[in-house]
Length: 303
Image 1 (tube, rainbow, N blue to C red):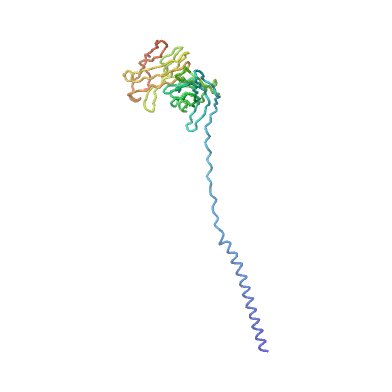
Image 2: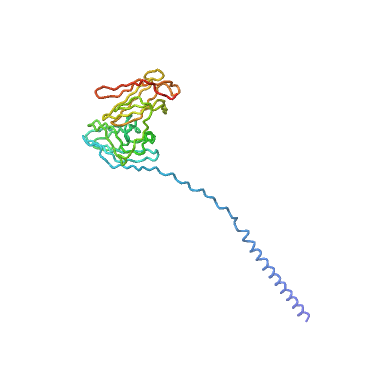
């Protein structure tokens, strides 16, 4: 009997002990589960601030167009204007020509090299070197007139309406050729013509506009007009600080055109110049009967 009671007590103690262990394990596990997400969750990072995308600058455009046109066709050669475009790196304005040689020998096409071309009625010197192209017999070459923005802006030219140039080929005589764009007939001539009048009649006009400060030499600027039906060559020689021939320059003007002529000093800067007078102005006329005139008043340097 005692053995049964002892066995029963042992069994009861064992049951109570198992119940206590089971209760302790279940109460500890939820606590660990609750703490685990907090420990493993990554820290919240601040949102990256994005810089606004810069607005690209507008690409320069050219509203003027040019339809292909034959400028000259004779003696086995032909000159055609094929297009007008804008080089964005400048931006330079470009007029493209096709030079055709259908003769049995090579032909040189030369224009504007160290001389002038005419844009919208203004003579512009040396448009990016002009054209000098040797075209073999039976072939066609491409050539371009290229204009700096500063060249056009100086004359108030916003778009090229007409380009005139004297082409030399050695085969026949193309003479002065004119390219007309979509702006032909609608442009305005805006170049400033004011200043101290040196000479003026119904045919010619010479106006002194003031000092000129060039990249290499200083000088004076003159506005010129040729209102005749013939090309005229204008030459001038200046007396600077009493020294005759200290500055001289010349330019060709096509019929009914104008130009700005920069006459540079050879041996003085503007700071060193006290007086300047026109020694003479000469306009070449047919037959060698040049017109020479000398103003009486000295030029006003504004000093």
